[in-house]
Image 1 (cartoon, rainbow, N blue to C red):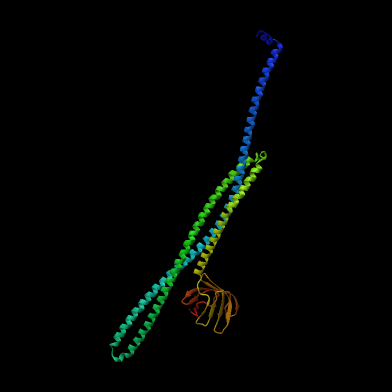
Image 2: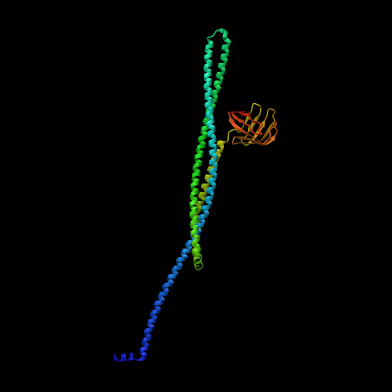
Length: 377
């Protein structure tokens, strides 16, 4: 023990001991520094990985937002076009309904006038019968006066029969007009429902467009912030390709929905065309496809193909095309010559019993003529 203490006090062993302790201290310090450096590198790697994932998600969200904006814009355009068509059909149907209501009011007024005239004729008939009874009690010297009263009674009965027939015709016309008004009212209600539906779809599309624009602005801001770091993320290529494939699958999934929307729009357009056709059929008078004649010997043949033939008692005739719309009869593309008639010729018309009557108009040489069906069914 004494020798060991002595040796440790010698310079060489003391130096070796100090060097050994210093070496161990240096080793421990290096080991501690190495552990701290590994942890810092792992933290940096984790941070870069997180930033890479965030950038990938931002780019994918931006691509999806662009696709949604394009779809929303296309749908918005289709809905606006459909809204314009429905609004036009709605306006036309409203105008036609007002016209039919006015015609119905006029027919009711005419019916009331006819009833008043009929009542007056009935009263006249009663008065004539009373005169006849008084004349029967007179002497034979006034036989001539009695015969005159009888003739007056016969005329009154004839006028009464004619008035009753006119009343029955007016009643039938009123019933037909009431039925047409009811049909047009139902059509108008359907158009109003379709217009409200289109407006709701338009509002929804506008809301989606606003949301898509907001998402686009957010995505663009995030993309601008991430653009500076994009050069350091070379491994993001594989991730982006995977997300592109997923977006392609999403497009494939959404394609049936787009096709369904297209079919719905096609069906709605077909329904709208059917409504417009029904309105046109309700408006157009059923005056074509037969021959009409006047007391002056003129004959007018209107065919379903849109062609006409106008002839007089001397077998002179003119042929061409005709259009009956909005209360006017237009004869054009005429070939042949008939008196002083000049073509094209446009005349206002109004429906009459078994035909129609042409009104006054500049250049209309057929004004105030009533055309009666030559072959009534």
